[in-house]
Image (tube, rainbow, N blue to C red; front, side, top):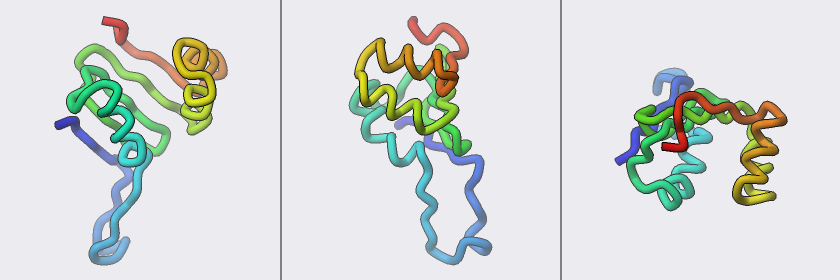
Amino acid sequence: MATLTSHRAESASRSGAGAVERTAAAAIAPLVHALLGEDPPIRIALWDGSGLGEATLGTIHVRRPEALRRIAGAPGELGLARAYVSGDLDLEGDIFD
């Protein structure tokens, strides 16, 4: 199963017993798993410090939520290009392998 991490997780004592923190990674995990499988070979690092996957081939840094809006609004290469050119998305490593 893909690794789901959150660097901003608060301790249970500060957030209350049984509180569940909702991260951006948890919100997009079903979509990422549907597109890339349960163990994506790339890491998707999100603006809130959470992330999905291992950086086997590289990392996609999603800097702002607007990147996801651009990708959803124009699926495929056009949405990715718009997000990259606008600075909402950065690529690290050879993710195209």
